[in-house]
Amino acid sequence: MQIASGISVLFTTLAFGHIMVHDTQHMMSHHEDNHFFIVAHTIIAIALGVLSLAGGFCLLTNRPRQNSN
Image 1 (cartoon, rainbow, N blue to C red):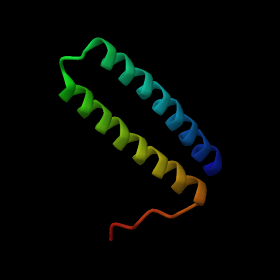
Image 2: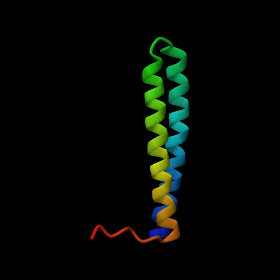
Image 3: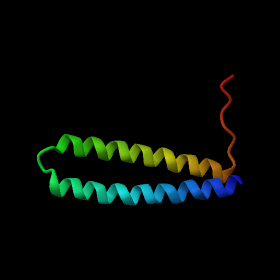
Image 4: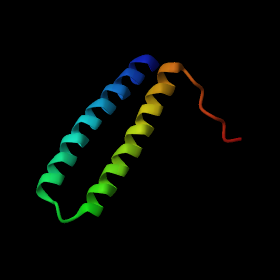
């Protein structure tokens, strides 16, 4: 089950990345006046993608979570 979850997270991350690239291209072509929003959107999307990839990697490599105690 853990491997299936990891693969699912990785495919979802790839789909998210694909959507973000097309969304950013659309925003750049239609909203040239608000560059701050486009930059903030791109930074947040990259951060979420990296966190998602890290989660999928941890699921696939069977790494235990850190104990908070």
